[in-house]
Length: 290
Image 1 (cartoon, rainbow, N blue to C red):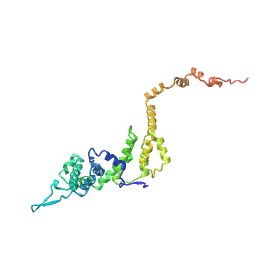
Image 2 (image 1 turned 90 degrees about the vertical axis):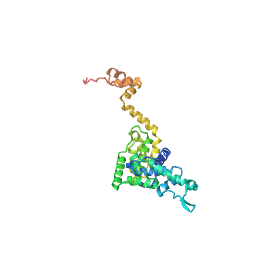
Image 3 (image 1 turned 180 degrees about the vertical axis):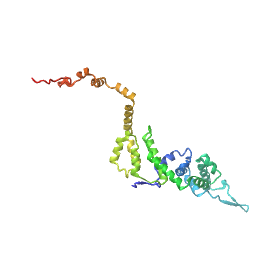
Image 4 (image 1 turned 30 degrees about the vertical axis):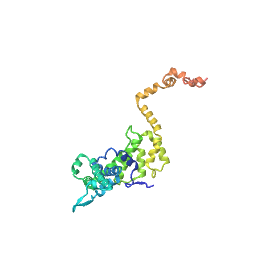
C-alpha cells in the first residue's frame, strides 16, 4: 500500500457524504476553498440524472443545435424537432447552468449571472476564484494549520470526529498536499480524548501505522465505544464534587464506618486486627528490664 495519500485518490467516505445530501441543493461556494467546492460540484452533477452529460456540458460546452432547411432558408431546429438524444442533451445544458448558479453566493452570482452557457459560467467563476499562486499557498497553510490543531470536540461521538477528520484530509488531497500515512494515522489516534487511551495503545502495538488506513482504525475503535462511554461517565462523576458526595452516600455503611475508624481512636480498637489474636495497636511495652 502506498504510504502517501495523493490527490488523485478520491476519498470514498467524503464522496458518500456529498452524494448522500446531493438531493437537497448544490454545495455553496466558499471563496477560501474554491478547489474543494469545484470537486464537490462535480460529484453533485454526476449524481444527477444524466449526470455524465451534465458534466460534459460544463467541461466541453453545450449541444450544437442542428439546422434544417425550410423554404430555401436554413434555420436552427426548434426543441420539438430535436431527436430524443438531442432533447436530453439540451435539457442537461440548462440543468448544468442552473446547478452552477444555485451554488454561488449572492456577490459572485451578480458578477456572472449573465452567462447562459455552463462552460462559460464555470470558467468565469474559476477565473474569479482561483487567484494567484500565493493565494493557493495561503490556503495550503490554513489547511496545515487546521491539521496541526485538529482535536476532539468535547461531547462529539467517535463517528462525528471521524467524519470531520476525513473531510479535512479530503480537502488537503484536493490541494495535492501529500501526507505520510503514519503521520495521518498518528494524528487521528493522538487527538482522541483520554478515555480512548487504552484502545489507542492497543492499536499502536498491533497495527502497522505506516500502511494501515485510518478508516480501518475507526472501524476497530467503533467496536469499543460502549466501554469507552462507561470510562468517560465514571471520569466525569469523579470530577464532579456533587457526584462524589452522592457516590459516598451510596457506599455501604460498614465501609464508611471502617474509613471513619482511621480518624477515631475509640473505633480504631473495635476494628483492630487484635480481635483475631494480633498485637493491639494501642499496646504499650515497658522499657524497664527486670
